[in-house]
Image (cartoon, rainbow, N blue to C red; front, side, top):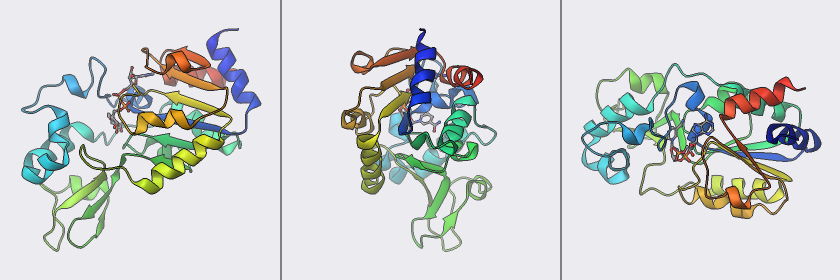
Length: 241
Ligand code: NAD
């Protein structure tokens, strides 16, 4: 049996799947990841992306932060691909319990997923740092330069920057889903960003699946490794039904 076929079989047998994904889930939607050769880290800018999207840089130089953020991190036209769509479908069928994502693009919800834990926040939520007023993505994109609230405060995207901690409530919820899962599918993540990468250690079942187009540090401990593009792999799985 081929790897994709085995994955299809396991999905068929399971009703407690948890999916944990990263930037690779959205590359087929046209959003570059951080570490692939053509990803964000290889693009030219005055400072490395890790520096620009850090908390201290945001405080020190909000103009440059928002220039980069609006230019390189927002993909207004992107839409869900087969991976997002099939995961939403599996949730509807009662097979998948939760999606845990490091992505900030909102594409799982756009595809119809309901139980989504966004470990790194979302570009779709923005709050005034002075009065707390909520702003949608389109509103801050319509503002020139640093987005400002009507009260004068800077509007900050609800996105976890480098040097900032994760929301402990969301992290705990993700851990609890992973502990209870009978099948854990990890897709499109390089598994090098902590603490998110440590989540795999909470899984104690025997159906740990890695889907990635490259090797990952967790391949060796996986029960199944499916190599290739995640959108194509999920499309193939759905076609087989
Ligand atoms: P990463 O860039 O470190 O790793 C992406 C991984 O996905 C790589 O291992 C790559 O080989 C793999 N990959 C790329 N395209 C793939 C495809 N079509 N099919 C299968 N595998 C594919 O990303 P990460 O692990 O998520 O962690 C880095 C950080 O990047 C996270 O904090 C996340 O918030 C942020 N990020 C998010 C987005 C987004 O929201 N879409 C985009 C870029 C970066």
